Image 1 (cartoon, one colour):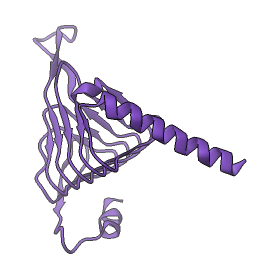
Image 2 (tube, one colour):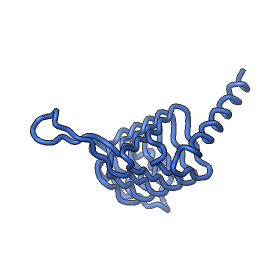
Image 3 (cartoon, one colour):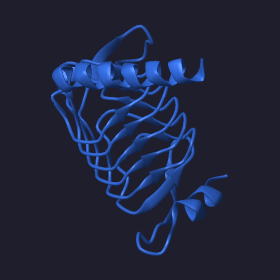
Length: 171
């Protein structure tokens, strides 16, 4: 039974990759898109090489707004990348309009579990977004950000910090 389940997982992964190779604007080499991922408006989404999109992640483009994801990016469980949303005009909550702006995740970015990256944000190279954070502004390269809204917790030296060091500082 274990072998059948393993074969089925591999088959589902191959079928997903085949689908996304046609549906996305561009799909790099060595990407892994796990079960339960939702990519809305995939024709506006570009994934670089070696991107990992974990289960339950949502990548939502809208109104022709692109989402550009660089090489070696990890989008953890339940994370959301949102290129669109609503803005409230005037004093009344029922006066809203849709707005959308591109989202860019540069190379070597890690988006923690359950984090949300909102429209118009660029996350710089080798930056880490802590689990559960809401990113409303651009993130400089080599920074660890966290919180709601996300703020810089510390700068990361990309040559001296391992992923274990980073993980221990998030919690």
